[in-house]
Length: 62
Image (cartoon, rainbow, N blue to C red):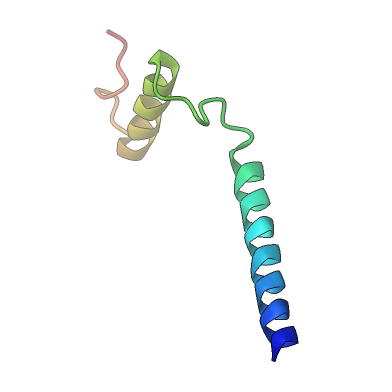
């Protein structure tokens, strides 16, 4: 019984570590990862919205 509990705990911790590494690698290309907010992050979000809307008025330079 104890071995079963140990195996379940180890399997869970290994799966969690693998998931955590996967998430970190996915976000490693994002220069704004962990940033509270800055002008660059706001520009990136604006660009994403413009791509979704595909309207020329949204992305018009001011």
